[in-house]
Length: 328
Ligand code: 13P
Ligand code: SF4
Image (cartoon, rainbow, N blue to C red; front, side):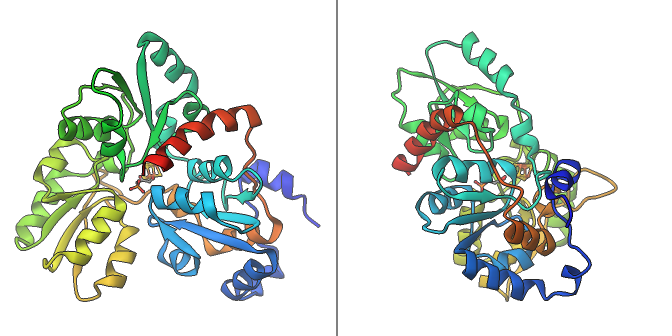
């Protein structure tokens, strides 16, 4: 019998043992889910095979809404750490497990709690709006959480005379500021995936496919937003490709979304926008891609790695998420 805690502390996840390597893991996951009354929630950025086995696939907002109302005993979160943490904050009585603890987020990491606390102190009397891509500690310092789906609504819910701190994504913050006309004090953070699309690469794709429409997530910088014909959150982008008469899209967001786009529109073409990185121009989020069927199986079977949050932090972090859900 292996020492699971030791393996988790050394590797961040539980690997398959020799016997488990011979199992049909998809069938086993389906069986275990039923036996344990577990639900698998997956973000659109994880591999298609995981999206296909999940009970619910969504963007950050939809996943938090689902986590708040599920009657499952166990939530298996096929996403990244802040998402699983948000699920635990909303559903403290449920066991929340994450297949690989290394599934972090460069955007959440760009906003350390202590530094954000100093930033807030330096700007007193501001309403603090934080993107959901933050740690529980940062949420505990926040007045209202938002996601890319509802950021405009959340910003507009703050009375005109109030100053706003918006964190941690400067690209989303600046985009929302342009849309709403609200001046905000914006934290200087970014997502390494959305911040690094190659404008030259996208324009070259457009030259090769002049009929294609460029669509982008608002976590992209202004120069990408400017050349895009449609800008929206993950679910807005998916809905747009469903409704649009356009046949070809250049997709400037994490390419995992193309799985859902293709499912609904098998006759349309989706070209993933290239990243700046000369070696890997694929623009995948390596954190999301740490989720695998193997790790999904082991975390469901052993109910580990589990997300545990200090109760005082959880209670403080709950309030701004609840405010967001009430406003959404
Ligand atoms: P949404 O799911 O809100 O579009 O956010 C995108 C993202 O980067 C999630 O990590
Ligand atoms: Fe974080 Fe960016 Fe990955 Fe989303 S795509 S989880 S914001 S690093």
